[in-house]
Length: 356
Image 1 (cartoon, helix red, strand yellow):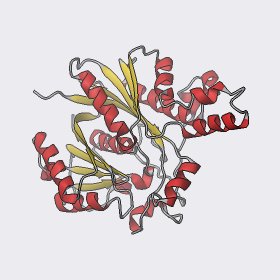
Image 2 (cartoon, helix red, strand yellow; image 1 turned 180 degrees about the horizontal axis):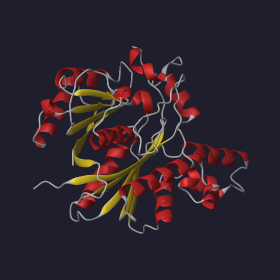
Image 3 (cartoon, helix red, strand yellow; image 1 turned 90 degrees about the vertical axis):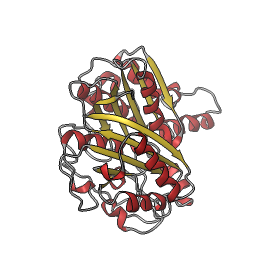
Image 4 (cartoon, one colour; image 1 turned 90 degrees about the horizontal axis):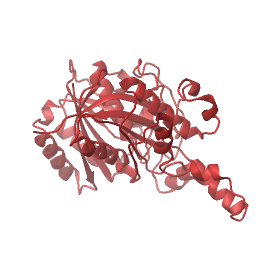
């Protein structure tokens, strides 16, 4: 019998006002630039003010997301904490490297080093929540969030009663934006973020965010949905190969493409990198509601965590905001959501969510 996993709570800070779980994209933040920054909550509501002043911006964002998630799940403390990130804390890393050069490797500020390591957020969350259990951080670019989810699922297989806090984070960085722009990853000219998919050009928007999910083998008091399965696909040869992988994945879960009520796609507005996924959507999912999210979140290594939040929220609230919809398909009481994300045309992932 296949194991079952549940998302019992969520917490997310992103370029939209997403930190309030009582709302679901009620207020949309509009950008006329190619870099999307997080809409920040009032940190004092989630972090001790004494602790707050010693933390970098992204650590504040990540810790707030974790606390929001824990409150949403109504759990006292998780059994373990798992995070995923593509590039970690770029700003603190840059500050540390600048000091190495400026002071000739002498009299360095230890704070910049401690807050620049990839596992700084997982460690901070553990210390704050007094969690002495399993603690791990996965750093593998476009599969970082999915690997973190898979890690939690493997731990829950022998003991479904446990709860893991699974998170993902990445931040914007000017140097990274300039480097990636030179190889066409981002749009050459500033665009209207809400019209991202109307620009038939290469490149996308740079985004950032931190998201946490409370994952358990048993449904909690505030369960959002079931995390049915996930799969990672690296560099499929073409759209036909990708379609075969998608159908095999769905078949293994005893459903067909026609039974997917909502398709949350990771189309990024880049005509080159979106090509394979767009063909699969048009040929395999013409009966599903077409939901997209990267015009709201931007593109980053762990943007699929934003997509997962969108899918879980749709199943929990049984509502799809107009800003997410990109076709006229109607589905009442959606029961099945499939998230297909692509990162830079290399990393493809499938996350299947079902109504609880």
